[in-house]
Image (cartoon, rainbow, N blue to C red; front, side, top):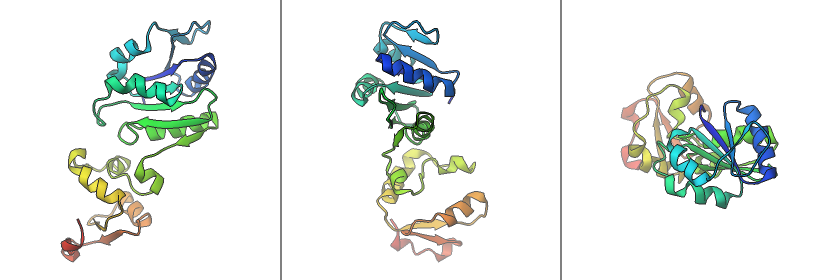
Length: 203
């Protein structure tokens, strides 16, 4: 992630934000509180800052209660393909929650990185992650595959996370297909030739 803002709303939060900033040296620590630390930018309004910068940022880490985070970002949420990764860390750095753009925007990975820095508990609620099954909208990125538009995949992803019988056609072999073969969920049937698939068995 290139452009990251770390937004803190309490003095304890600023301390945590500065710890996180060490891991992301180009990030900006922002607060409305007065701070004598030169690495902290004091702004008059977080809402105004988000209004001007939400769409320009790659990642936003709130060091605040989740409710504050949600209320502040709500007016600016547009689309999961363009929204930044948003995560929320509590003041004591106990929990790191992926809030917005978990897969496409990278908030799940962002949460895991920050949880590792703070020794915190990462809270990821995306269905494919909690089930430990493939994230169909981003798996292609791992293996430099071309992915269909996410709009056309929405129905397929819903069927997949609901563990509906799924046909997987592997008519090429590369490191990605080897990964799929090794991690195949029990509701997926693997085929190596399209003529073998009985399409009536799969939605």
